[in-house]
Length: 134
Image (cartoon, rainbow, N blue to C red; front, side):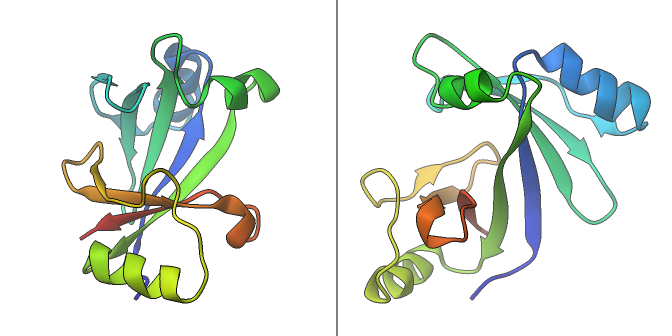
């Protein structure tokens, strides 16, 4: 079921700080900053030869990453994202095995315009895990 690593998401309090590290310091190629109001974040993707780094910045007062950034003011790994061929089949298999899907359990359209789901970190070794349909 699990496919390739799509991206590692790093939450930052300020996108400019993240860009200083990944674009300016490490020389990564950065996308434009895109507001994702339906998800409460702004994103920038750093392209790597084999995957991406997603920088997440809180957007708005009710951003779902605000508490994470408050606990980790210097930033930190927020989640990992793996590709799956069929997100509904993956969800159904995981639920049947007792794993928890966050939210209402239905895929939402993610930053890449593809269906995504988030899996409860307590079920995945303390790691918030995103699945994205390939």
